[in-house]
Length: 411
Image 1: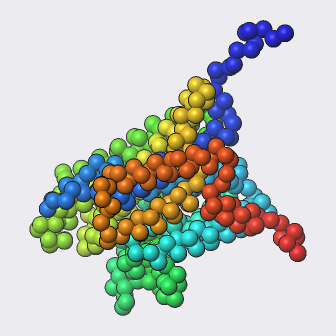
Image 2: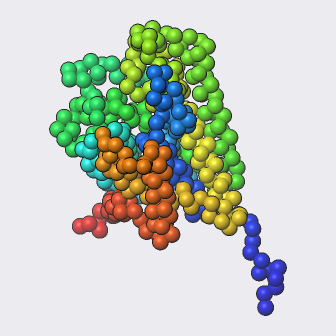
C-alpha cells in the first residue's frame, strides 16, 4: 500500500525535458505571430499631421518580425543537434530537409504575393534566409557568436554602400511590392529586393538567424540560461535603443538627417520611433547611428535581437513556472505558435479580402484584430490538444522528411 507521503505529486519542475523547452519556444513564436497581426491590423501612427506613434507601433513594430526570424534560427538549431550540431551525413540530410521545407514556404509566399494587400509578407524572405543559413548549421556556439556579432556590425555598412548602387540601376533593382510568381521572370529586381532593397532585407536579416542558431545551441534546459537570456537581452535592448536615441537627439543625428531629406514638414522623429521603411537611407552616415525599427542598422539589429532573446528567456521561465504549478499557462500562445505558417497564411488571405473595402458594419480595427487573434488562439489550441499539425506545417514537415531520407532509400 502506497503511503500518503509517496503518493503526493512532486512539485519539482520538470524543465529538463525537451518538451518543456519546445513549449516555451512555441509560446514565443505565438507571441511573435500575434504581434505581427497587430502591426498589420492596428494603426502604428495616429492619423494626424505629425504621425504620432501609437503604442502598437512603439511596442511591436520591428520587434515582432525580428522575434519571428530569431525563432526560426532557434528552431533550426533544435532540429539539427541542439547543443552539438550534426555532422557528416546527418548534417547533409538536415540541410536537404531544410532546403525542401524552404521551398514549400517560398511557394506559399509567392502565392500570397499575388494578392492585393497592404502588408509586407515575410514568407519568401523567410525561405531565402533558411537557404542562406545552411552553411552555418554545423558551427558550434563560439563560432556562431563570432559570426552573429560580425554580421550585425558589418552587414549594415555594406548594405548602406550597396543599396544606392542597386537603386540607381535602370530599372532599379527593387520590386515595390510583395514577391510573386511573376517576379521569377525578372530575377535581377527580385534578388535585389530580397537581399537589400526590400522590406525584410535578407542580407542584414541573416543576423537574426545566426543569433537564433546561437541561442538554440545553448543548454536551454539549464536553470541559469533562461535567466541569462532574459537579463542579457534586456540590457542589450535598453543599451542599444538608448544609444540610438542619444545619437539622434543629443549628438545631432536627427538634425543632420533632416537636412539630408530636405523636407521640413516630414515627421522624421515619429518615423524613427516606429518604422523607417520607405525613407531613402543615403547621403549621410548618420543613418547608421539610428536604432529605428526596420532600419537594418547595427543598433536596430542588436536591439531587436536583444528583445528576442529576452522574450525567449521569459517564455522558457514561464514554461518552468507552468510545469511547477502543473498548469499549462502557455497554451494560448503555444497553440498558435505551433502552426504559424498556416495561421499567418490565412490571416494574410483574410486581410486581402478587405483590401480597399470598408470594414463590415459594426466592426472596428480593434474588433478585427481581436477576431484574428482569438481565432488563431482557438484554432491553435484545438490543433495542439488534438496533437494535429497545421495543414501547411504538415506539408513542410513532409518536405523536410523527404529531404532527410537516405539517398540509397530513394533508389
